[in-house]
Length: 450
Ligand code: SF4
Ligand code: SF4
Image 1: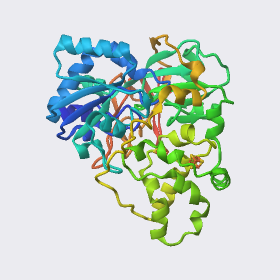
Image 2 (image 1 turned 90 degrees about the vertical axis):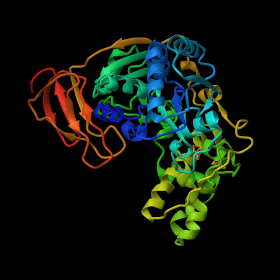
Image 3 (image 1 turned 180 degrees about the vertical axis):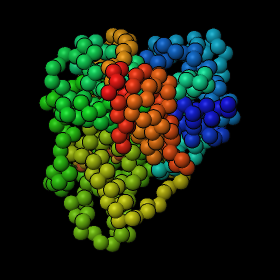
Image 4 (image 1 turned 180 degrees about the horizontal axis):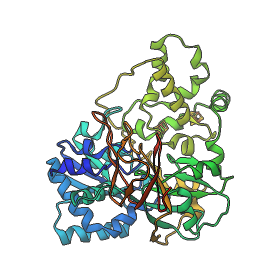
C-alpha cells in the first residue's frame, strides 16, 4: 500500500483542531515540512506530552513524511521555553540520525497559528486565505504525525490523547476511544469543582460548553485535544454568552478607535488586510449599506480574520468583541454573495516581532494564571461503557455508516466510510462492543447489547 493510501485508509485528519483530511494535505510536493509542536493556545498539554513520550517515533516519522513530500527541510517548531521537550527531541534526532531540525519559536500567541509559524520558520508570508503549500510548506501537528506513524503500520485513528487542565487538583493526559463522552473523562479527572464550565480546546479558540446539557452532549472526536475546566462564573464564560445585538451596540457606543485590535492582530502583522477597528466603527450601520462595492471597502477585510481572538481577549482595552463582529460580517458577506479579492503577496510588517503578544501576559489577561503549574501531567487510559462516534469529525462531508444496529465491532473496525467523490474521511472505532444505534449523526456502541 502506498503512503497516501495508508493515510487515507486510516482516516487521519489534522488533530490540531481544524480537522482537514491529512491524505489530501500530504498529497503534494513541498520544500518545507514543519511540525507544529507549539501548542498554539495556553493551558494545553497534549503535544508536549506526546513529544516527551514518543520522541523517536515522532522524528522518524517526520523523516518519512519529509521524504514523501520531497522536502529539503523538515523541522519541529516548539516554543523556546519548552526546554524539556527540546532536549528530549534533540536527543532522539541524535540517536536516530533523522534529518530533522528543531526550530525554537518565541513564546507568543498565536505561535502555533500555521501562517504565523510559516512566517517565523521561513520568512515567507502565506497569501490571504491561502495555504502554507502556496509558499512551499506543509504543516502538521504532533498528534497528526504520530497518527501517520500508526497508519504506516496499519492502525487507523481510533482513539485520542487529550489533556484536562484548569481548575483541577492534578493536570491529566488521557487516552480514550473516539466517541467517549466528555462527562466520562471529567468524572475520571481530579477536579476541584462540582459545578463547572468546559472549554473544549484552548481558551482563545476553543468551544465553550457552559451548561450541563452542552457537556452531556459532547464526545471526544479526532480533533479534541484539551478540556479546560473553569468555574461557571469565570470571565471567559460570561464573555462567551454575549448576544450579537449587544456586541453591535457596544461597538457603536464604546469603541474608542484606538486601533490596538488592528495593530496587534497576528494576521495584520504578516501583511494581511485585517482591520477590525474599521469593522467596529461601522458595524452598526452595516444593514443600511446597499452598494456592494462600498460594503467591501469597509467590511471586506473581515474575510481575512482567522478568529484567533487576540483582539477581543487581549488587545481591546474596552472589552469589546471585534473577533465576533468579524465572524458576523463574514456571514453577511457570504449571504450577499460577495467575493473579496485576495492579496497573493503579502509582506510582513517591519515591527511584526515587537507587536507579538507574550503568552504569559495573555494568560494573566484571561485570569488563568492561578491554574498554571510546573508539575507534569499524569497519564491514564480508560474505556467507557458506551461511545457515540460522530460521522462528522472533519472538514468536508460526513462519512457514511457501514455498520447496522446489532453488529459486533472490535477496536479498529471501520464503522463509517468516507463519502464518495467528496472531501471526507473514514471513521473507525477504538471500542469493542455492540452497535446499539445508528443515527444520522453517528454510531452508538455499547458493551451491552441494546
Ligand atoms: S480574531 Fe482579531 S486578532 Fe485574530 S485574526 Fe481576527 S481580527 Fe485579527
Ligand atoms: S481595540 Fe477595542 S476600542 Fe480599540 S479600536 Fe479595537 S475594538 Fe475599538
